[in-house]
Amino acid sequence: MKIIFVAAIVPFVLAIFLLHWMLHSKRMNFAIDQPNHRSLHTVPVPRTGGLAIVSATLLPVGLTGEPWNMQLTVCAILLMALSLVDDVRGLPVALRFFGHFAVTGIFLVWAMSSVPAWAMLVLTAGIVWMTNLFNFMDGSDGLAGGMAIFGFGAYAIAAWLVGNSGLAAICIAIVASATAFLMYNFYPARIFMGDAGSIPLGFLTAAIGLLGWRSTAWPFWFPLVVFSPFIVDATVTLIKRQLRGETIWRAHRSHYYQRLVQMGWSHRKVAICEYALMFLLGTSALCFLRQPVMGQFLGLMFWLLVYVVMAIKIDRMWSKFPRL
Image (cartoon, rainbow, N blue to C red; front, side):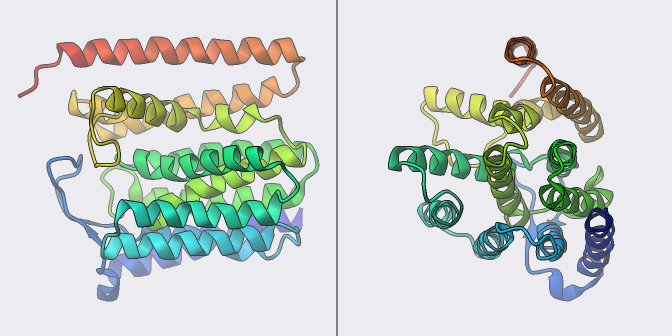
């Protein structure tokens, strides 16, 4: 219980301190997000908040005593450093993805060295994709921070229910630092997390999800359901853009949440609706854990149907919305 308390308090206080310093120190003005025609914000906003989230989270990781704490720490730091350079100077897409694949490979060699080569390739692709999901979806005030709170919160509860306090502690640490960040990022946002925050968070989403599955804290589908608002939106949007022949790695405003904002929804309304969806998904996923296989399957099919209906509804609204 002590480690849980430390994991909840220390990252929150440290993140608050770092965020306050970043917002009031001229030395931290090295990465500013300037609005452009693809942005949903209209004024320059610093994008260094992710440094506070990741830095405040890493301290409790070393206190867990788990065999995987070094892997997560090193990989998160490497991704944060690479992404910070991208935030400040901009890096070629190929170099960014090479870094993501390299760090993912390092993690899997450490954590999953006994799996077959084909499984290693599948896991690598899945982790890299999840690593980038937070970046793709970090485009509306409060959205990515809220996803971290609800998603890792569900992870923490599931791990705690099976007595895995070390895994629960790191998840609670992320929730605590993300909560501190959300206090400055909820509409109107005073600071963004930037790639230095979204990329490591995406990696931690996949890596911790994999570690939890390997330790039997949850089944393989649990992380997919908990983080499905990001997974579904980003994946469907990518497929649709690919079918239209667009360059999929270029910045755009065609995600479902972006279209809602463009159709007149406020950042606050989008965030609150997403929070409600995340809460329901996390709660139902935790309930599914106690169901037999058939009950889990039916629950997953229910949410699949919900997503299909939601996508059709938003697509119809978008097709009728007047655009220049």
